[in-house]
Every structure is written in C-alpha cells, then in structure tokens.
Amino acid sequence: MLVDMGDMLRHARANGYAVGAFDPVSPDFLQAIIAGAENQRSPVILGLAESHYADFDPELLMPVVRVAAERASVPVAIHLDHASSLEAAVRGIRQGCNGVMVDASTEPLEENIARTRAVVEMAHACGIPVEGKLGYVAGVEGEEAEHHPGKVIHRSPKEAERYVEETGVDFLAVSIGTVHGRMRGEPRLDFERLGIPLVIPGDTGLSDQQVRSLVTNGVAKINYHTALADGAGSAVRKNAQKAENRSYTDLVRGVQGAIRAEVEHCISRWGGVGRADEVMAACRPWREVEHLIIYNLSGTSPEETTAMMAEGRRILGAIPGVRQVITGTSIREDAPYRHCWLMRFAHPAVIDSFREHPNHQAFADGQFRPRAGDRISIDFRHEPD
Image (cartoon, rainbow, N blue to C red; front, side):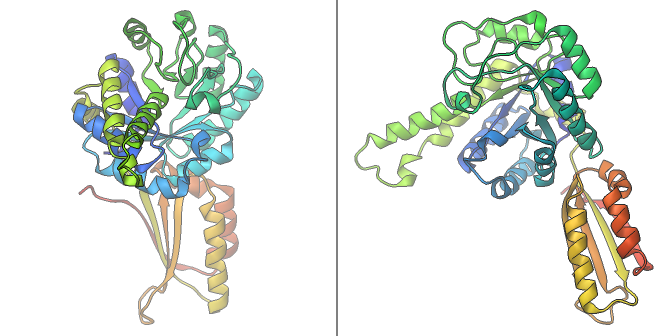
C-alpha cells in the first residue's frame, strides 16, 4: 500500500522508531526489501538515489517499483534521494516518487537554502514532502562512499533552525558524525547537533545504544544500502566458488535471501517490527488523480488538431506534478465527443497548481479553449480494489 511519506515519518517520530529507506537498485533488491518489510510487518521506504542512476534506468525501474509498492501488504513510500537539482526533483515526481530529497549540502549555506526552497515550493504545490540536507556526510569506504566523497561539514543548531525556517522542508538530514558506506572504528556522534533532524545516512558502525539514542532524539528515517550490497556480493562470490555454477541464475541464487535477512535485521534494530497496521491506520493512502477532458473542436483541420495535441503533450507534460498526458480521438465518427485529454496528476494538490501554472494558462487560453468551446472535464481518483 502506497502511503503519504510525511504521515509515515511523523508517526515514526511520535512513536519512537525509525523507518528504513532501502535502495532497490535491481528487481532482486526490490523483491527482497518488500519481502523483508512484509515478514516484519513494518513500513518501508524505497529509495531511488540519483547517484545510482549509473546502475539502472529510472524510466524502466520506476514502473516496477510502483507496482511493488501498490501491491505490498505493508505501508510503502517511494523517495527520490540526493536529487541534484530542481529539474531532477521534477523528473522524480513525474516518474512516481511521493517524496523527494534535494542535496545542496556542499554549497554555501545561502545557496543551499535558495536551492532547497525552490524545490520545496515546487514539490509542496504537488502535495509532495521534501527532505533537505544540512551539513555534508562524507564516505570513508564502500559502495556509498564512492558516490559521496569529501570531507564532513558540520552546521550549528542555529544554522539548522534557520535552514528549516527559510526552506520549509518537511524532514532534515544532517551530518552528526556518521558517514556513507562502512566505518572504521567507533563513530563520534554529536547529539547536540540533532536539534530537529529526522534523517541519518545509515547506521553502519553504530552500537545499539547509539541507535536507540538517535531514535529517542527524533530520527525517524535511516538510509541504508551498503550492507545490502555487501550481502548480495557475498552471496554471488560464494556461488562463484562452485565449479558447476556457471550461469547468471546460478550466481545470483540466494541474493534475495541475503538482502531480505539484512532488511529484517535493520527493521528489528530500529523498532519497526509489527508497526504496519498502526501506520496504515495513521497514514493517508497515496492515490493519484486523473484529469479527463472530452471535447469537440471547431474551425480546426485534422492536421491542426494533431499539431495542437502534440504541442499540448509537450507543454503540459512538463508541468510539475503531471505524470502523464495522453491525447486521443474517438474511433467512432458519430460519437457525441470526438477528442479527449487524459492527464495523470501525482496528487490532488496538482489540480490547483496545474490550473494556475503559467504554461497551462498560456496553452489553454491561446490554443485550446478558443477551439474547444464544447467540452466536459472531470477530476477523479481510482477506487481501491
């Protein structure tokens, strides 16, 4: 069941546990993550990190992720992690994410605030919660470290308060001494820096006591990938040692089991076991909206109609929160209405933001409405199965 990510994390924070955000970099990872969450009856977040796009095509993987989330028996959210720009966040929402994280943490504070605020204004108009990042959490070694090199930049509690107030972010990821990837030695956690943060990048190297302290201090989301990738790699290497295992399917046998076991361990460690039913009761289901217009045209040739539809798909499909634009013409010439637009909006909030968007107004007033005086429109949501 796909649910509102804001509701999910607010419930976690209020009830003293953290939700795991795991990266499904392949169908094996995706199936194992969902299975682990279902076995533990826990909410879960599927994190699509822009830094992993070299490993998969998001246009191909996201439809599979959406299907897995919608048919899961536990609450699921889909989160775009480490978006590098406003344009990347818009694409992530179009592809099906219902939470986004913008990462301008390596920039000076003023620039970070400006970039984050632009994403928040866009995403909130689409009903999408936003995670911001303050401070830079570097990697030491491991798969995630390769994606996040550099030094750790700490920010003061006063800077954190200013960042949250001026950006309007819903969740905050901060540098508190943890790093992406694996850690050497005992990590130093500056709990005073937590303030209002809700997200940390993994718990690799943290003791159980440190994890409990983080959750007690309000951490409601923990990003986790390196150990999953390590477990999958170990399973492949073990299979490769057997001479009879020559095919791809031989080599990846057991990979899902290794990933699932690690997911279940994390959920137990972070307090999410058995929370699914209460989270589903507390969270709004995430249902998209269909915007349908059926219409007749006057004074327009077939060629002009085709050109107008193509232009509309291009212009309207680029508006934030619009996931898909379909145009069509009735197969019956005697139909009472000959043409239609079918648009999929990410959230009911997009109804208003779409209507008020200058690109929509320019196209509607300049090209569509003068020719389509005879029209009917309706916004509707799919009824749950």
